[in-house]
Amino acid sequence: MTPSHVLPKAKMPEAAMVFAAGLGARMRPITHTCPKPLVRVGDRVLMDYTLDALAQAGVARAIVNVHWLADQIETHLAARTQPRILISDERAKLLDQGGGIVKALGALGPDPFFICNTDAFWIEGPRSNLQAMADAWDPDKMDVLLLAAATANSVGVDWPGDFTMEADGALVQRKEGQVAPFIYSGFGIVKPELFAGETRDAFRLAPTFFDAAARGRLYGVRLDGLWLHVGTPEAIAEAEAAIARSKL
Image (cartoon, rainbow, N blue to C red):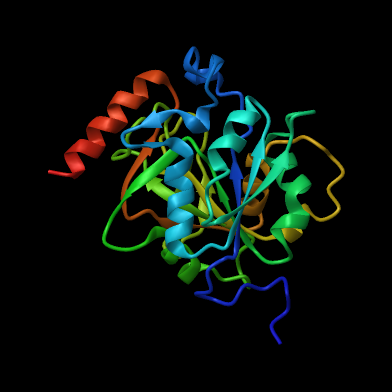
């Protein structure tokens, strides 16, 4: 029998942590009355790009954390059947992504799971990026596997990248003052063991990535297609123009 903490290679994770609790400060004034995950871009709201990708890949359940304007998000999700939605309620206190995972660990289960932002998505290339991640996952050498997009070709990027990538896929954190060729796309696979024994209730997720990189346990898969980041009101039109070009 395969140990519960090991995800067999090429098996799709059954669960995803979907981050929808943020305040969306950079998207103001839109987010004064509309939570960022429900901002419309093209024919869908942002979080539906994420959830539709999970459903298409066959991910069974999505744990969605909520805080800011949570009622609107819950109402939007009420009719969705794929993936099955479980709400992680953070109305009382915003826990950031790390704390959000810890709160939801019981629902996420004992096996590696997807982590998913809701302010970015991609126009798919010839292969499924989520399947590519599942195919690349190797629990013997990885604690975290990130979907990495090309800095230069992505839409809505206003920072100098996040990582360089070694020939074997290992990710190395960008050094200060340099430009890195890859950006964290907002999607990854992580082991729940990384959060075992965690006592903090609210903390950022990025240091977990950097700690894994320092141990040689952070890897990446190159995103196939075009990545779009929608972090500001101005980025909405830029993303919609990219979507329109992809349909030509």
